[in-house]
Length: 301
Image (cartoon, rainbow, N blue to C red; front, side):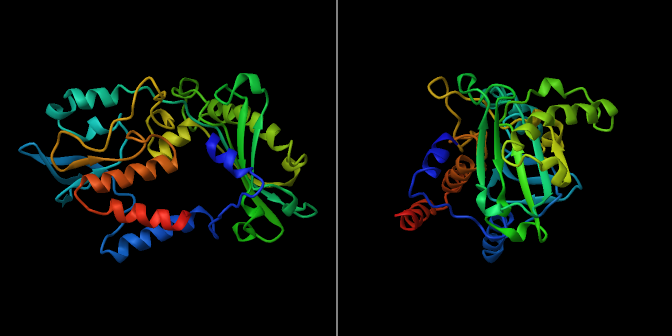
């Protein structure tokens, strides 16, 4: 992320923005999947990986359906993988070592839809980093906030005369503060508002009257991450420090089972996870990696 923002603010930098927002990227990926005969199933939880004679050859869904496959590419986290495996496999050293990886903290999020009348959106930047105290660093609690205002670049993302923005803390919110709370309780709702106050204050450095302009706002917490993203402890992913340890690769000792996602090399974050997908595709025997790298070289040369 630091490298990205370093590049982004160079004098001649250009930002490529997907018209219609990030969902346009997802739609393009789904179109590519379907054009090659694949299908995407949503709201289809997996109960377990199907194995016999030490080989993984499919998945069993919670509804009882079994999908057979020559190879299974699995992107669940290192902490959730053992839940899908028989005890004889999850107790093996390679699986226990993955599950023992420490987790990063979680997030606080604030999404706001606001009245943009009399506000010159084009005078705003699409992205900001707000840092209270440089000496404390970006990992300190209530010190750093990342802000995206995509309607600056793409007005179609909001109704006429309105804008949308998203502010979040960069994986600095501890799970322990939230783990015992009931999402329906008054205590939880009060804590949401309290912990979102720091985000509001950073946003008001950019749009001072934002609260008065707000038409709708939604607050996300570590419990939101756990519930909607199915994330272990609402975590961003494994906390692996460079030089101290390494992310494991895509391969496993189980024939037919390949892993990808943020519990694999190169690590956490969208660019790294996309890279893990390339490595997983190559590990299954699909000779696609050289062609994809060649295409990336062409696009960015």
